[in-house]
Image (cartoon, rainbow over all chains, first blue to last red):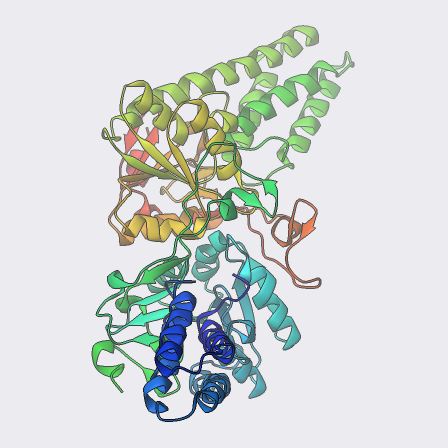
Length: 300
Length: 300
């Protein structure tokens, strides 16, 4: 959890693999391949849900075949080059999807977001917050409500910090106040990032995203997901097949080292949930704003 | 906030008024009436949302007319007697509504609750938790999921503590995990208390209640509200007329004295929200389980 945010996990996985590969000292090509795959496996095992992590590793491992005739030293350099390319592409991709997404943001919009899908969760620009930044850069006057996002408070800590930095007015709310906020008609649109999107448009994202999406539907507020194509997993038919990471109970039962709940009481701490496709108004990608049915629109 | 929970606020208001009245030293009946009303006003101004607070004060102030011919010392005793009666009645009323409500709880039920509507929020038995306790006392095997209830964490602190004491298995979840929990089909029913119920059955309760009710409807899980008639305000036609207390931003922006959000970022901290009547499956009262249309059923 030193690194978080699906796109940033992708970048970090690529960088980590390149670093690991650079330290392989063998001159034997078979051992080089084996060790490279072992390092990739170790990185893959660190977090189960974010698609970008696996996407980046798969892309990096393609180098083994692509460059198999190159000397190993040269191959190691190619790993580094590819990781740097993934980082640059992530920033570029974010900016493109942000531009497309910003067309959905009216001037004077009040926007609700959940968790952090900003520069701190990506290579450096942001997905959901990228769209918001871009709208601001285009001169739109906007205000943002940030769900604090228990248990780790990425909204209160990271999203609030980023938006303050971008000079965008932000108000933190308890996650449980999102419903009342949306119902009070103060919200024009909701935008969140994604950790993995299934072929049918079901979205895995930070726990609480599903609740916000249901509240959006109940109150007829558009619910947008912003994510690069590297988050989309066309091999997974529906969200039910996405593995949800369950994290340590102590994140809920304590605050830093201060105990909240009585000793002996357990907590349930899923890190993500699944928002079914019918709750998602559009998915904003670098290839355009995708609309239902996603089974069709996410193909290209 | 040393005292919380609508029914307990009612008891405490009555006790507080009786205590205040006992200290009035005048022998002049007009001054006695004036001072009594001043004390009641001061208590009424402490919290705006809980109906029971005002209900108890109104009931206590009726003594002024009822006992107007008694000597003042005797009147002061009657205030004390009436406050004690309100406390006893609250416990009795809770147990009656708990018995009626327990008929809605199947054996092996998984129950979700929000905030704390237990002994710690009432005269000593509980409304929503009263129903749960009663089901357990009747030998039913049940398990409870408790929303932690940000910002003040009444669920993690108080509900978890009470249920552990009653030997009822309880699991704390972040408020934002309630949606995923309900959707995962692990929840048979949801039960919460209330701070004020309008004539049409709209319910004011702890912030986040509305979100849970919407999630219940989306997933076809029954959503019950347990409250004594002293919580029902027949003078208020709809929830829109209920005044919602907004509390200090620091409850959201800090945890005890630890800062969470960056300096200068504001928070929105409504203490309650309104759940519209169409989301409420039934209202469990001491006079029976009330069903829609509440405009009719809450009359008696």
